[in-house]
Structure formats: structure tokens, C-alpha cells
Amino acid sequence: MATTEWREKPRRSPNRGRGLGEMTPSQVFLAHGALILLALIMTYPVVWMVLASFRPQGEIFADLVLIPTHWTLENYVTGWNFFGNVTFTTFFFNSFVICALAVVGNVLACSLAGYAFGRLEFRWKPFWFAIMIGSLMLPIHAQLIPQYIAFMKIGWVNTILPLVVPKFLATDAFYVFLMVQFMRTLPKELEQAAALDGASYWQRFTRIILPLCLPAIVTTSIFTFINTYNDFLGQLIYLSGLPRLTVPLALRLFVDSGGGQSSFGSMFAMVTLAIGPVLGFFIAAQRYLVQGIATQGFK
Amino acid sequence: MTTKESHSGSGASAVPSHGRAGARPARRSRLTPQQLENRTAYLFLLPWFAGLALVTLGPVLVSLYLSFTRYNILKPPRWIGLENYIDMFTDDPHFWAAVRVTFFYVGWSVPLVLVASLVIATLLNRGLSGFAIYRSIFYVPSLIGGSVAIGLLWREVFGSQGIFNRLLGLFGIVGQSWVATPATAAWTLVSLHVWTFGASMVIFLAGLRQIPVSLYEAASIDGASALTKFRRITLPLLSPVIFFNIILLTIQSFQSFTQAFIVSNGTGGPAESTLLYTLYLYKRAFVQLDMGYASAMAWVLLVVIAAFTALLFWSARFWVFYGDD
Image (cartoon, rainbow over all chains, first blue to last red; front, side, top):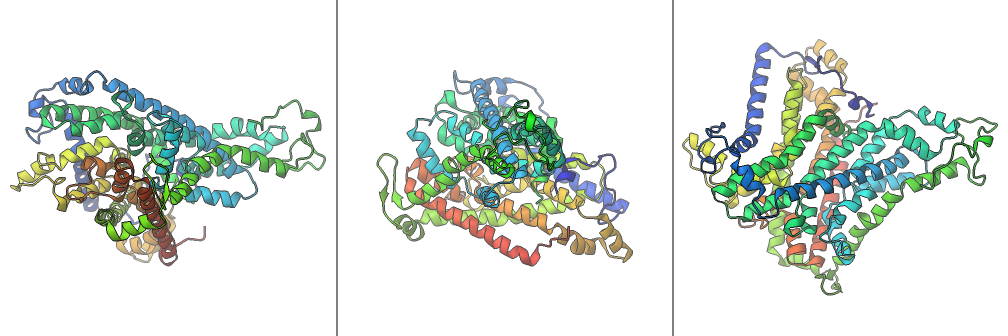
């Protein structure tokens, strides 16, 4: 059952010595040493890049030392305007519009489907549930070509519709599953009382279940945002022309721009900005993210 | 929503005489509560059914049809039977290059990610201080690792001017460009996947918390060492989570695309060393407009993923331990 994962044990009392037993002081020292070393190795490339983005263009590859000797924002200015009169203002705007609509679509459609699978009894339920779980494993590539052809025939290519409309049809089965798992944990009595008072299923769903599902909704929203924001393949296929590009598509153009010091500086600056929103979301909603991903692991 | 009902309209006949919990006002006399629930469920599922037919399952079936055709979008599809499949397996060196690269990628990154995440999770679970900080630092890469931004960073990290070579330079080693050398380019992709082990680690951490402490205490009384406890208690009780992580990682790895595209700038080079299966599929479909051939490739991928998943499920009976609860 997933309940326990959602309410984390208080951090102040870590499971000291849990499981394998208390470590000796020297073991603790070694463990910290290894973990800190690993953390440094893992973060070094990102930290180096962020700091390099503040260096003057000639000094980016000057040395391994992290802290720039001369701080400057010129890379951010040139990077933001790197592609002429269409700037990163447009790219970020396009990305955020797609993400916002995808979040709304996923939350609406997946909670509806989640309510049916999680709390209602209906004919063929095991069959449809198996189909839903099975669709988790359908590779996106086996859907992509007919989707593209269909969207092309109705004139949706080069609009954001192919990226957004499917989200309103609960096509991310993972989030349906997340909702089902969460809704199943809510006690039956909650709805029985409302049913006795004559509340309809719709009222039970909107007034009782949805408000209690806030953690699952937040998790769905954050993961949908991050996955949509990071998505590359879908945007690559459907969007072209500078004014319609999103952040990943624009970043990719830096590779074609020939290299050279000026494009490296601009690229590092824009890459830094591009990962900013994801890091921001993580810091703001760490609890939900970590718990959300932990919950998918169980039954 | 058509299921919307009003509170007041049906108030009169609200409480049925037998007073069964969950019974509802007999507003539409012909519907039993079961029928109403049934109908409501299908209404709630309407968007999902539409998505199934139009976006997920429907297109997958259409691509099965397309895989038996030659189709370049401009002209209508022409039925050619098994020709795409025969060409693929007998007459397409790029296909086999892509298969090799993909198995290399999946075969290395799944075990490496699994071991890294299990080891780190077990270590963190032993009650070290700073647990939350470590967990965050190790988890964040998995949120950004799939992005174009990090792909570009990796391209520079392992480029000839990159910081990896600069670090090697400290030891007097002159490195080549790791992304431009066929022998090492695929390793940069594997390394990027291993960098994102945090997502699996978090799942392991949740699994480790489920193991009852009493088991370890009992083992300690019997004088079991930490290693014995890990092998005899942790591993068996964690095996469902290990299984889940393997399934998840395998399915994801087979579908990796973005990083190979970015690191090779869409070519799969050098010398097809980063030509992941999905990247080759993309090129056939959207660069060469071989929609029929690409659909056949997509179905081969689907069958391979299904076969691996089935194999894993079959193997589960020998090594996955499901407890009583």
C-alpha cells in the first residue's frame, strides 16, 4: 500500500543504524568521504558550466578553476539574442505555454480516469485496467508515425496542438496509474456518507476525492511540467521555424552555429537558464517529487 | 458532465427502506445502483477511451498496417507484404549497427544504474547524517539528465576541449575528443545515463524503508554480519523493487533518444557509434520519409521490449520474493 510513502517520517530522527546495524565511527567517516566525493564528481560539470557562463568569452576554457576572475553577464546578453530578432523570450514563452496546457490536461484527464479505475466498479474493469497498464509499455515510437500523419492531415503540424491535445485524453498512463494508486488509499466511508446525503458521483469526485488528492495532483503537475519541458522528440517533429521553437529546439541550434568562443559562452549561459526552471521546481516541491517517484514503486 | 445531479431534486425519495450503505436516491428508476455506477465509470473514462483509440493504441495498430507498406506521405501507402522486415534483417547494415549500439547501451547502462542506485541507497539508509542533502544532490541529475541542455553540456564535457580532458591533463594524459571517437562515443551516453541513477535510488530508498527492522534485529542477535544481513534480508525483501527498477530502466533505455541525437548532432556518428535504434528510426521516418520502413522498425522495437519484459516477468518467479503481506 502506498499510504506510508506519502507521509514521510520526520527527518530529524533518521533511521539511525537501521537495517544493517550501527556503523563504527571510522565506517561513518569513510561513507561520508565516499558520498561527498561522488557528489562533487557528479555536480562538478554543472557547477563548472554555470560559473563558466559568467566568464568573459576569451576565458571560458582557460582553466579548471571554478570561480571566474572577471564576472560578466555578456554571455547572457549575447545568448539571449543569439538568433537575431527572435530571442529566448519567445522560446521560453513557447515552452511555458505548452507545459501549462499539458499540466492542465494531464491533471483533468488523469484524475477522471483515475477515479473510475480507483474507486468505481464497472463491467470489464480488469480488462480495461490491464490495457491501461499495458499501454505504459507501448514505445512512443510505435505511436509516433501514424500520429504524425494524422496530425498532418488535419493541419496541426507546426502548431502546439499535437503536443497538448493528447494530454487532455489521459494518454500518459503513468499519471492515471499514479492517481489510481492514490485514490485507492482513501477510505470508502468518505464517499458513503456523501452518497447517503444524495451527492452524485460528480459531486463526490469534485468535492471529496479531488481535494484529498492534492498531493497526487501536485506530483502529476510537477512531473508533467518537467517531462514536457524536457521533451525533445515531440517538439522536434512538430515544431519548426524560429518563432515557434521551444527552449530545447533553440538550444540545439547552438550545435549548428559552428562553435567558437562566443557561441560556447552564449550556449552555456542559455543552458544554465534552461535548467533553471526545473531546479526551481525541485527546490519548491522537493517533498512531492521524492514521494511521488517513491510511490510508483509499489503495487 | 452528464452525471451531474442536483441535491434538491431527488431529496424526497432519498433514503431507501433497506438503508444499505452506499445506496443512492432512485432518481432514474430504471437504473440500479450498479448500473448507475457502471455508466458513471464509463463516462469518467471517456477521455481515456478517446486517447486510447486516437493517440495510443489506435496509432500503434495503424503502424502495424503501415509496416507492410511503402509509404512516403506524398503518395498513398502501397502494400508490399513483408518486404520491409526482410530488407531490415537481410539487407540493411545501418539497422544492425543500430541494434548493436542499442544493446551495448542498454546492456551497460541498466546494470550500472541498478548497482549504483542500490549501493548508494543502502549506504544512505544506514542513518548517515545529511541524508536529505545527499538524496537531493543524487536525485536532481535524473530530473535534468534527459534534457537537451544536459546533452549539450555532456558534448562539451567530453569534447577535445572539455573538462574531462582537462582533468586527465592534470595527470599528464592527453585525451582525444571522447564524443568524436567511435570507440568511446557510446560510453559518453552510458555515463550520462549512470549520472541519472537518482530516480532508481529514490525508489530503492522507499523500498528499504518497508523492510521490518525486527528482521535485522533478530539476525543481529544471531550474530550475522552486515554483509550476511544484506544478502539474506535486504536483497530478498527488496527483490520486488529491484524487479520494478529493472523493468522501468529497460523500457526507458530501449527508448532513449535525445542524448544520442544531441551528442551526435542528429547523425548517430561518429561511424554510427551512437546510432541508437530510435535515432535511426527517426532518421528513416522524418529525414528520409520512409514511413513504412520506420513503422516496421517501430514494431520490431515493440516486440523486443515486450519480449524482454515477458522474459523478466518469467524470470521473476525464480528470484523475486513476495512476502506474506
